[in-house]
Length: 272
Image 1 (cartoon, rainbow, N blue to C red):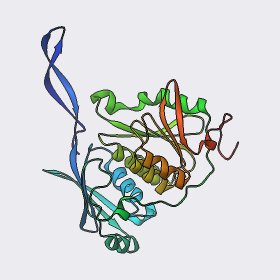
Image 2 (image 1 turned 60 degrees about the horizontal axis):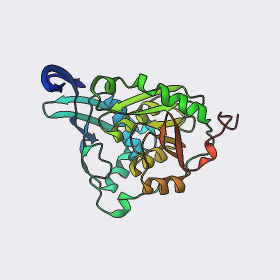
Image 3 (image 1 turned 60 degrees about the vertical axis):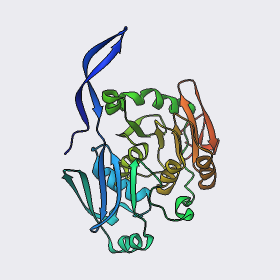
Image 4 (image 1 turned 120 degrees about the horizontal axis):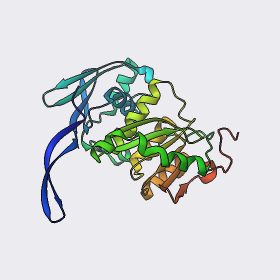
């Protein structure tokens, strides 16, 4: 397995002088995703939790509709990066071949390789409506989030995606140099445990772009809170799919851009 950070000599400018030192720098490597022997995507990613990444990417991109359709995965270190060799069910592979989309992306690129506008702006089916969360619980999770961001602490270069209970307890965190990759890793981790995607909230340490809302909605997540702003296309998609979209979720408050009814002063799931 490739390292996730490199320790390298640096020169720091401080107090009017250069000072020699050392620093931990986040790694990003090409990660090729292959389905039944066919190369589909090359993403730049942090080489950690790659099994989660493979499953999460496959689900959030609609290549798989269920985690059980991924029957085998092999992580292969290569000189030029990492290959994720996946075996998927015949049904999923037939649909994959029909889609005809190949991707070669920058770090966490979400729309690379699309050939038509219909592919670029696809609408997931509506999400369920069961989850509720209080503002207090949301901000409890936001305050504790940095404690779980180990790669960010080490390098200062990583995004995180976290899965949070209605009480504000952080249940799972995944990190990556790319925000889409961090979310895919989280989705994969949750799916591998058969997690109900309507049972929690998603927190992300980035802006809420269209692709982030699309990925979350595709797997059935109901609630997304981002520390930065959403785009208007993301807001419009959240309105359509029914996802609660929050931006500027920080210590002093937050802004709700879509479906505020899930923000319940009393919290709980299913109204409890």
